[in-house]
Length: 244
Image (tube, rainbow, N blue to C red; front, side, top):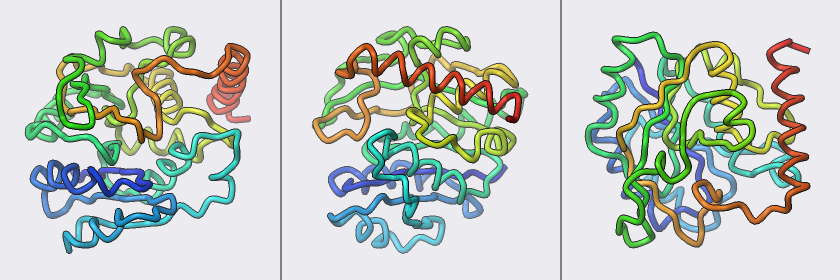
């Protein structure tokens, strides 16, 4: 079972080395780490190249819409990484977290004995210094399956998601101006199959002032914005499953 780890990077020099170290030790020679960079101006790419590991493959997000105010930059960056992946099992990964040392082993075992297309595991939330803030992301936001539940309040955590190549073929290309890639992947997977929520933390999920997304924290967006993007998402979702 070949693994692709998809990482979206942007000015991640502070934590990317620690993250890559936590991943590489768990991968086999046939596996790959796909890095999609969104124009980092710091030493992120230099740090990645320093590993001189053929499993690390670096691409650049050149999508013309990436700086549109109507989309999440990380969403287009992850789309680019997923598109470049070739593995049978695709792991999404943030640039500033740390994987538990047994994450890959546990997930491969689950996939070898089940028919889930998508898995979401729990995470331990840490701060910039690595101190634990919350022991369970699932408990913090009441994570769980369900299309309606997650359309109203998204509980899919992108960096905790693993899905099969079959899902990749369903989710790509992302709709234009898609707001949340994790919500999109989770709900498309939920429509075609059950999503397995593993109540075991397998990463240290780092929250700090420079995070690109605000997952796990209350959004500062106004109510009308939240309603509008969910309505747009619903139309995108219906269009995809009906293949308009």
